[in-house]
Image (cartoon, rainbow, N blue to C red; front, side):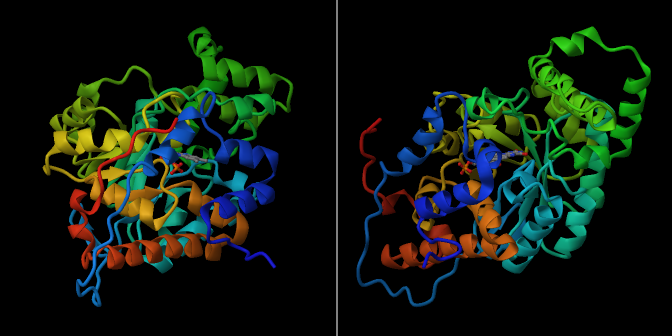
Length: 402
Ligand code: FNR
């Protein structure tokens, strides 16, 4: 009999794929273009080998670490994942609330997505005292952006994760081939429709003549074509407004410095792949960076995120935390990312697969499995404390096989 939440990463993915259905799988499992970067993110881990060590007393081990001044039970956060109800048959009540309860059980931070299908205040209430970070898609509309930041502050966010690699949505053939685009039925836009600034904006737009410049923007144009074939009314107007304002392509570094002045929250820039971008982010007021390529969902043929990590770590040179995501599937992967200099990692698709298969318990099981393997890898590599994992625990990297 198959376990409800398989332990092996490929079996977990296959089971979730069967459960989620075609649209859920296309959106969640899929990546940009020919999915070369999606594959490269994982392949990169295979090029590093841990060197086991003998006869070190590792009876007492600690996974605890401190990130941005808060001690965490392990160097792992739940990555922000939007439109999450696609994993659970379109049921928002089975998405963020279940994830928040699992994160609370684990004591690990959840990064609440801008594109959540539950308002962040409700998620914060479920989390209680447990850590929560808020992920910001920097809206084209200043009032919406400011409102999201204010709501995150009021909801007790420990940090603001500003995702800068998605100022336009990537080219995602699996979604396109299903004649379906996420958000077109309102998935993941409740964070917006529950926002007072967004509601004012949507009302103003509904009263005003259509903005021809907005209609030229590729994502909006594509989705509008789809929506035209569908039901009209409030949902359509909200979806259009969301697509038009969820992100802003005009951003440059001085905008980050202005955001820095407007919030007391630590700012963590997500999506960094180039060492210069890490330096600039810190120069313009960021308190940390996430090395990420959005799980291969944005730029196909982009460098594997793990290959970008050492250069960013060198550029940051210990002055700020460097977090990492894209491609982590196992505890041994976490070990490798930490050895290459990450201070903590974000776990993405694997916990979503756990959610699809077994809700709160599924998320918890997947994360516990990753932590258990990390702990055992430390023991067998002769490491007592997670903060001591370093490049000396790895063999020289092997050449790429792809
Ligand atoms: C994401 N990711 C993401 N990132 C973000 O900043 N805001 C978001 O709303 C989302 N939404 C989202 C949805 C889905 C379905 C996926 C798979 C990913 C990116 C996410 O935070 C993280 O960077 C990647 O998931 C890491 O890649 P892996 O490890 O999941 O392959």
